[in-house]
Each structure stands twice: as structure tokens, then as C-alpha cells.
Length: 292
Image 1: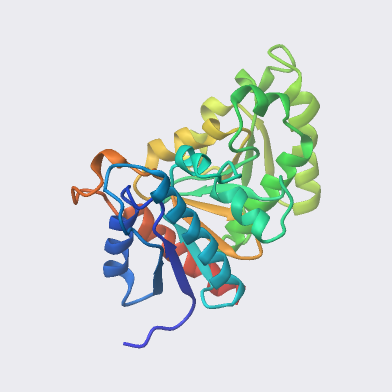
Image 2: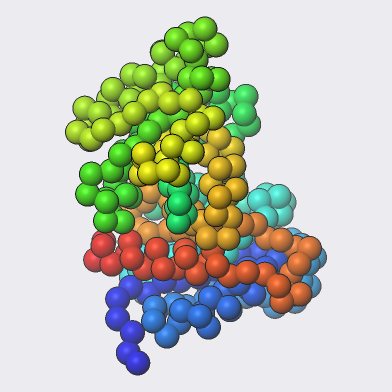
């Protein structure tokens, strides 16, 4: 059967982890319906044993995916999991793959958004790979507006015409009117007002983070803006770990990844589940068709 539409490149990630296994399983499962191609090598790498050689191969796969994207040989990329620790040892100068693609496509730091898309919850992060201390200290109005705008754009691309989004508060009970901290009044509330103005959509917030995800799960919101990494990723992974997809918004290309790590401990045992990778490929192909 002839395949139509976008071709999705799948980087293997760290070849000592489960990336090659889940990529192979994904290609077998969806390759007859979606155009896919594997990118990367696992030559000379022992499964379950991370190394500088494996990290360098993971980095080479990322660079090759950029080349293929720029040449229009692929229309989207889905990244297998990498080890940030080993990439750093190998001289990789970025906190993660998100930041790598931003730099390669000329997007300034702070202009991309990590979004987590699962069957039951969609979350955009105002900040990503920072310590909790720095996430709070460096939180800016502009970050929240950027994340909210990108979340709206993603939800519309997924077919939701008038998305309803909520913005988390930073402090317990969203600050309780300043009783538990002034950041929600000083930073978050002005960002919510700006999002209402620019999107012309119902934007709620700052909402207490201990209840807003439950409210979204029950259908009150289509997506939630979280203010720091774990505030958003804990509920997303708790609800749908095996089917949640990481989408980078703000790039001129489509980039997704599964939400799991390298799982070196189970590499080569044949038990790694490809569900998140499969969902990432399906979403990447869908988003790429929308860009075409």
C-alpha cells in the first residue's frame, strides 16, 4: 500500500537504552500507515551500558535529523530517549533535545514551549530544565504568556476550535490573595489577563495547582499551563505515562518525543513498551500534515 503524507524521522536516542527497541516496535506497528524512517546507529554499544560512544551516536542522530528536516527529506522528527548526563560528558552543550532543536533552527532561548499531550491531559510548561529554586526566581510574565499562546495553538491544531485553558498558580491555593506569596498577584494574574486579551478565549487563573488538573481531567479545561517542570509533568505522567507525548512548540518544524527515559535497566530484555513512541509518531504526522 502506498503511503501518503508526512514522513516522520525517528532518532534512536541513546543506543544503549530502550530507544532502538521501541523505535523498531513502532516501525513494525505503524510503518504500513505512516511514512517513517529510523535515524541513528547502535554499532559497538552494549545494551544497558551507557558510554561516551553511545552518547556520541545519539548526538550524531540528532544532527542528522536536522539535516533531513532542512532538506525536506522528513517533515517531522520523533526523538528516542537520551541520557542528558552522558550527552553532557560527550560535550553536548544543551540541557536537552528541546534546546538543541531551538538552536539549530535559529529560535532564541525561551521562545519554545514543552507541551505534554496525553489522552486525558494536555499541559504546557512555562519553564523546563531548571532547578526548582531557579524556576521560581526566574519566573516571568512573558514565559507564561508564551506557554499559554503555544498551548492554544497546539490545541487548535489538534482540532479544538475554542480551547479552554487554565494557568496554574505558583503558591499554595494560588497565593490565597497574597497571604502565601505575592508572585501570583504580581506575575501570574497579569499574564492571564494578557492571554485573555490576545487569544480572545476563556483563560482561567491563577488556579490552585492541587485541583486544576483534576478539573481538567473532568472536562472543565482543554489544557493547563504549569509554571515549572514537575508541577506539570507529575500529573501528566501519573495519568498516562505510557501514552503521553512531548511536543515542542515554537519551532518551525514538528518535533515530538515519548515521555519516558532511556530505561537502561531493561534495555535488551524485550519488555519496553512502544505506546508513547507510537502516539508520538501519530501526533507528529498529524501536526506535520497541518503544516503542509
